[in-house]
Each structure stands twice: as structure tokens, then as C-alpha cells.
Image (tube, rainbow, N blue to C red; front, top):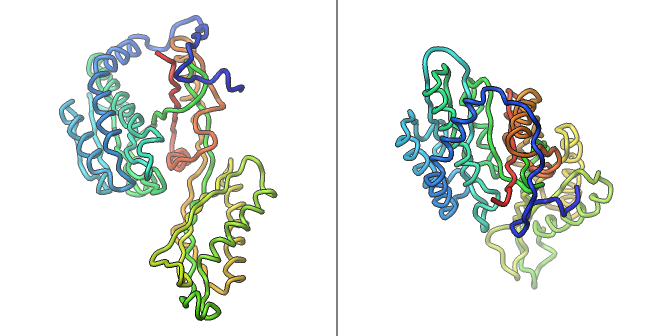
Length: 362
């Protein structure tokens, strides 16, 4: 897709023609639209509060309190500090039996650049979906349950994996989350995402005075720099669809002291889980070779895997029908197709859909 069909703030896009025909249960859809429209000012205020108070993974205390207070005011049964310190769960049940709809709201931000990934929008989108479903169940007497889960630490902390392991998703029949993304105007994307291995690599060396006795030292920083160079050369031999990138740092460094420690934080991405493991093994060899060359020791700690996102085809088909008849078009290319998410792990375990909302200029 060429860049000239991607929505940008300065563009005035033309809405694509809609498909004829009715959607399934237009009465439900109308009530959903009305509910979200009525909550729009409150949702915007909530989003702006979260955006103005960015918090790193597992530190989302302000977001935790804002979301739970908002939902309690909307009549939800809320459990704070659910399984994780900054996670929360809000539930609503109507009648007896019926399906259980799960919804996720993310909260954490990135170091230095705040909510550049739009988790404030993901958070309020989850709230909007859950409140709209609650209203439809109440007013149209639909039996079932809605579970809205506040999920911390998507940015490298794999919070959803911890919540899955704790049983947070076990009652849900399906689960959904919404994510902002670039792409063509008036569209919703149903793309996938890349699988990812996160590697933390610790180099340990030996200190020495860099001027008087450098030969007595074993330079952990040199090991990290050499590994960085090794990986740069490796990129020539990996597929264009794979991504390898990282940073390194240390503590108690000084220019006149041989560094005896260095920590490297590295991401390896690929379209499939099997592929990412294969490429990660090649990257590990780069780290090991650097340790051998510098006489340092290397340890791989805190290794984690994010599976690629697998959209449920049935849920995706239903969403596509609604979008094409009422709102615009469906995209399968953009979204976060070259990024990764811990929600991918959840898609390996249950029926999940993650639509990517693309701005329409309105």
C-alpha cells in the first residue's frame, strides 16, 4: 500500500463506499453507538488524565486508581490489585448463563516518550466496549457476563502472560482489545504481529585501572560493543521480515576504569514463533562469541517470548461485515504488523480478536 493512502492529520480523506445490507442485530449496534457517544466526554477526560501521567510497566498506580474509580462510578463490580499490584478486574453479570465477553485495557507507557504507543487510548477503548456491552445486555435483556481486565506491563513485562497463568482469562469465552494504528482512513485493521524473543544478557568481567594496568582487566563493555557489531553483520544474513535491535548499559562506570559489568537488553522478532527462536539462537551465538573474544562471562537472564498475534477468523469475519456495511473498510496490512504484543500469547490460548482503529480525520 502506497504512503498516499495512509491517513495523516492534514489530509481530508474520502469515505469508501459501504456494502449494502443489514448487520446482525442492528438494534444492538445502535445501542452500542448511543452508549459510547454518551460517554465520549468522560472517556476523553479519562484518556487525557492517563496520557498526562505516563507510568512504566508494573508502576501504573495512577492509571489503576483512575480506571477503577471510573468503573465503580459506572456500576461495575471492581476488584483492585487483581493478581498483580497494578492489575484490576471489573465484572458485570446479567441474568443466568449466556456467554462471557472478555475485554482488555492496557495502561503502561514507555521510558522518555510516554504514551507513544497509545495505551491511554487502548485503555479507554476497553472501557468503552465493556460499558457499551453492559448497556446492551441491560436494555435488551441479554444474559451473559462482561469481564474487563486492566493489564499492566505490556511494554516488555508480559503482564498478560502473568495474568493468564493466574487464571484471569479462564472464564472468558472470547477476549478482545482495541489498538490505535496507522493505515488507510476510514478503516479497521485486522493484521497480525511479529513473534518476539526478549533477551537480557549480562556480561561480567574484571576491573582494572585503564591507564596503569589495562591488561589486568576483562572489559564487559567491549564484549557488549563486539556483540553489537556481530549482530550488525548478522543482519545481512537474516530475512527482511525479521527484526533485531537492542540497547546496553552498566553501573559504576568511569572512563579510567575497565568496566566489569554490562547489561544488554535485546529484542528479536520474526513472523512466526519457530522462526523467532531460530533467529534468537543465531543472536545468542553473537553474544557468546563476544564473551569468548574478550575473556568475559555471559549469562542469558530474563528470556521471554511473545507469540505472533493470531486473529480469530470467525470473529474477524463478523467485524469485517459490520465495518464494511456501516463505517468503511477492512485492512490486513497495517496495524502493528511489524511490532509485537503479549496479547499474541493470549491468542495462542483462546478465541481472540484485536482490531486496530485507524483515524478517519473526523
